[in-house]
Length: 143
Length: 283
Image (cartoon, one colour):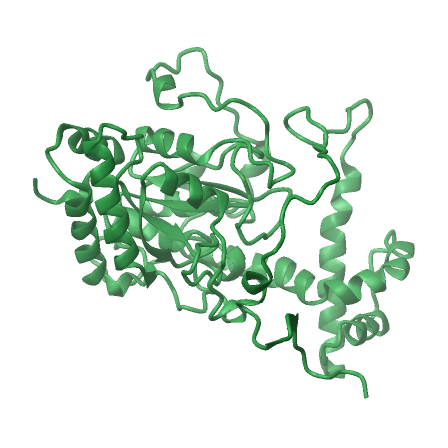
């Protein structure tokens, strides 16, 4: 998943674990919050310590994940590791390199704007935990 | 014929066409092997009824003289693929109980070609892992052991169940998916063949997404010829995947000339990273 094919046994496992935990897990868990806090993060990205524990607290709050105050500095550090990782992209010299959006030269296909599928209400709802009168039924969230 | 489950796709195809063996026999051999290989935790949802029905249909088709290469071949399917009416939960409890009302394009194509589904295979949860240790079903185990040791080893991941099942001859081949190594790394860990096709070659429709601009499904097989045969059946343009490449699919098997003279093999400098064991550095 993260380019550890060349390693073997314990090392690969450790490396894979570290990769999962640090980059993917964290990115996913906190993606929503991080996106909302992106403005601030982008502004300060040039600074090596761009995310402090206040920002980490804000991201956690936006992502609705409870993080104990004692864990915030470590979380901020992990964020900075992720941003630092992404920052490496700016070191690549792309002068004169044509942007590549696909390995095959193709544009997004278009089709005629007509109904092509439908009439499958029962199938759509088949996996719903609760369905009523042809709708998904969800717990009440607004008082 | 003995040890039918150990056949390659190519050998099974030829034997089926000659009438030396039936798909039902191949399928029963695999189902029996799966029964006794619970310790590998490779198959996590068994579908013997579907397998027997498909095998019987395949035998009828072969008798009628209409037999594509994959007809009657028993396969394992990674849990990331949506299979109609069969649990498809990407090794996560979040999708526990989910039985799709539709079939992924890849499995549709394989079944249309007459392939047989033995069951669903273990993997890292949502394909996020490289050791098959993040699965809601528990770890998948590599059938290989170190010399003189009984320590259970990882089959790699995320297609760990697929790799383990093919290496242990529980099926003739399996589907895998690869975002950043999830076919290639477990194939290497278990000594089988796997290929991540060029992006766009294989439809992503009905495959639970990890990173949509990188995900590709591919075959995991016992040798290169089998990979060529199975890949051809998986490939093709699909209007339901907007990034699917509208290109003709060549006969990959016919391209296996065995001659690689004049080819250049590139190894990215970045692959030589810190902490590389010396024996690998020497290669």
